[in-house]
Image (cartoon, rainbow, N blue to C red; front, side, top):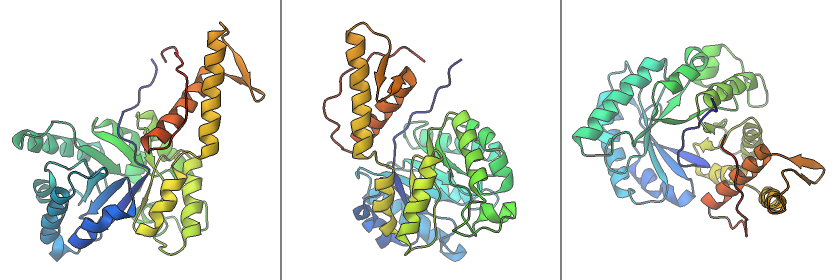
Length: 315
């Protein structure tokens, strides 16, 4: 049986903003991120949680018509904060929530049920709010496939580049990483494998806490993309243009994709089932990949030129 992937809006970039900083959240759209993540967890001190919930709700309402995604990073279960978080932010305009420090599939199943009840009671479309599962412990990384399968609301997860040096995941694994080493790559590759096996197309790349090293932002972004990431996140606005560039198809990629589709279309019109293109024998897999590149370019407003239609057999 062919695998199916969960359809969702594609974001190149996601910008994290502390949830207690209303003015920061309201000005965040000007930085060009495809999605905003209002954080109620690590960036908010315990005594400021209640005020942060109100600020995040105000930001969602104020920014509800923007062309970007609006997400909220929740506190983890067993903190006593999650229900209060959800009660405040599940309102019209919310696109998704991220569950910090997800431990097991039951965490996701419980969140799914609560979201459904809130959607029904508030007249919101049932099932529309996404869940982003953040695997930040050894147990969560080991069980990422099961976690992703616990709810169809999960459309995106990560991270392709491996645990962030100094972060919860690296500490849980006992890894002594720094930003210049590659020891975490195997864990990132394993996460990509599990996410894709679960039908998740949108995989987050590695994120850095080094704010001023833009060359490093580019380096880890390009590495994450090679490892299967489809988008990147940032905690500083200066990283967003670089991330958007990395995860947008380049003009060379667009030209090559268009030429591949055109070559196959011409061959089909001649009644030929196979065609050679730049020393490569094209097959349907290559054509589908080319069409994905063109679709991504169009999604972010890039003109891909005239592309002929090609009828492909079902997978």
